[in-house]
Image (cartoon, rainbow, N blue to C red; front, side, top):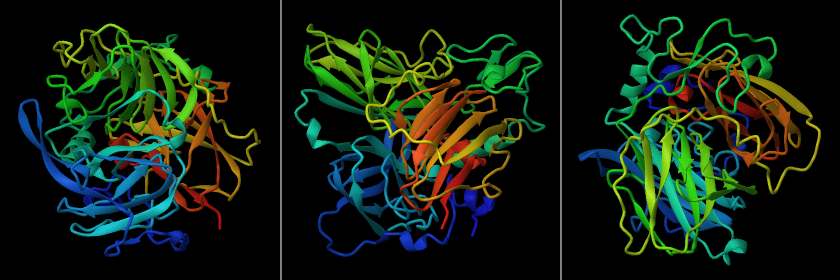
Length: 501
């Protein structure tokens, strides 16, 4: 049974997938049993925060003691989800590898959890790292999301201070209003239509013979494609009222007190629904040591890309002198920013403007092509290989995989135990963070070069670029594969990876 587009949007679902399937027998999800021991309680709740001096009603995922999110360790994932938001919902454990049926994607095969009810999750947990959890519905826009950190006891002896930050984009409009505004864009009442050779607000020009920094030209990446005239790259399609780091703007940033000369491990999560960021460590040198929870060979720098749904761990060794150091998330292709501050005890914290003075560049593959997995997959030839083409129509606001929208999609078939490669070609003029459920994959080609790249669950595809990922089919089920831009997903950019029975 396929979920219709009407139900997909009408029930505020940005990722409802397949209902009753031949894999239903694999589901281990079940209603909560009274008095069951060992389960950590997580409550989906309504709450009020302050944004730009105004109260904002949002959601959250809190433990019984009021703490946001969850820090646990490898072993088993035993969580009781209690729905207290007054509407049906469901939570996806982004980065974990649950058995089919406990992934938190609506009707795949678990139904929405009614308000006032609970559900118990119980499965092996062997994926340490920086992960997160979020509604797989439009409620994600309303901050129904939180960090999910899985620690490894083998790293307990490391003398480093963890700093966990969830970035988000915020609007006082409802997500339904935002989506309606996007789907109306390009219609008769839209005055933002670009003249030939001119970019609309939120766009950057790509001229013949020129590439964005870190990118190759379309003809180089996808032979046979040409660019007959200037083409506008749509960097952002939603302008938000604020950009948040742990629910706070730069007008009142969170300050983490640190020790001079100490070591800090930033665990950074891009929980934004439609905004990619550059992480800027400012005066401090950073070492990227993990992406999407998986370790990589240390890569030094002061600016790191972070697409929607992605995570990055950055180790920072602080100066021995007292001081304060802002860590910023720069909105891709814009001047807005979010952030937080590392400061020694007693150090003054200066005010930071919410807008910078220079527009940041679009995200590219310059660092992705340099990341190297510390725990790469075994070298193996792919038994299956598929090409997946990302497309879009900004005027109609329709986003496609292989020319199809969700509901008319073509599932990607794989056999249990097979190594599968997906060559993902972005033939649209927006970047797309592509997320695969139920699996981690390795980036094996970026920018036209084969690499032993990072192990991930979400990879960024710049406009007119190709990335190839590989994964081993060891988790039977029917798994969502989609763009992690919430409104691209809601407008059709999703399919499934389906195991052959």
